Length: 133
Image (cartoon, rainbow, N blue to C red; front, side, top):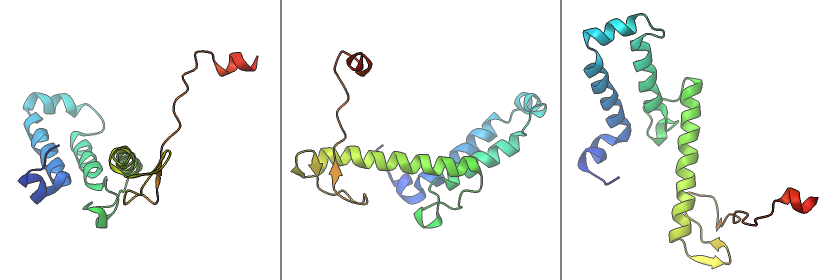
């Protein structure tokens, strides 16, 4: 995504919280409220937990979350988001880092050391099972 002033001043967590609240208000028609009234969990509980997922996904206050994860789902989302960010760092690093040896690239911060290319995927048309037999 492109950088913009709103993102810089409010941040993606703040924008996400604002977006959920705006959409939730828009959906709160009389008809929708009646339909949801017979469902569990309650609409407000769902909104509150969704807001918590967004607010806690960075995991710690020092990393920009206004609150630490307090549900199993929020903790799982935090780790999934962190894993995704680190895998993106690897992908970008392979494209931008200086090669220093075959399959080895210079360190990309904040990753802990030099990058090593993954093994290529198997492309042999015969299966390993067939070769073992």
